[in-house]
Length: 220
Ligand SMILES: N[C@@H](CCC(=O)N[C@@H](CS)C(=O)NCC(=O)O)C(=O)O
Image (cartoon, rainbow, N blue to C red; front, side):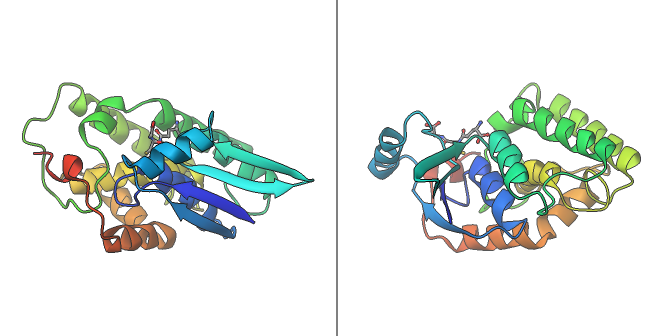
């Protein structure tokens, strides 16, 4: 049995990806939420160096304790351990497409990620002063999603089935909604992704959690 350690569901975008890579593909796990920016989070990081960041997955196997972290490594390792779960498409060209999309998200869109931290309590409230680079990231996102739908035939980013590629963009879609950044190219898929069963469940649980983090809620 896996134990997934995550941060606050409303605010921890990488945690959302880790959780979706399990819950979105029918893999059983226990979850441990450690509130971010607290002594308990510091203690978790010290206890689990060098993993440190969330999400992390721990389990015992073959008499050994294992710990897996970083969402891209999590996607690849879970796909390898659960080949029938469907993290990556079976068709090689769609699988390549899914990996390209996940990898670009993992290392890119930094203006969008930096300026618009995930906050599932925020709804359609634009940033007061959108920073340099945000428009470029939104343009790039529109290009990527357009290309993905054309190339794979949709309705998901890598063809007919929800895959790890969609997982990587779930927090991105939530930012588009929270900060009123959707446009004609991104609105439809962002909406569909937010309504996907596991994504919607994460969002419900996030909004039900009582803790609020002022530094994110007060972002103008
Ligand atoms: N590259 C990592 C990023 C993980 C990450 O930055 N997690 C944040 C929470 S959303 C974190 O643990 N921050 C605490 C820290 O960096 O000390 C991944 O893909 O999972």
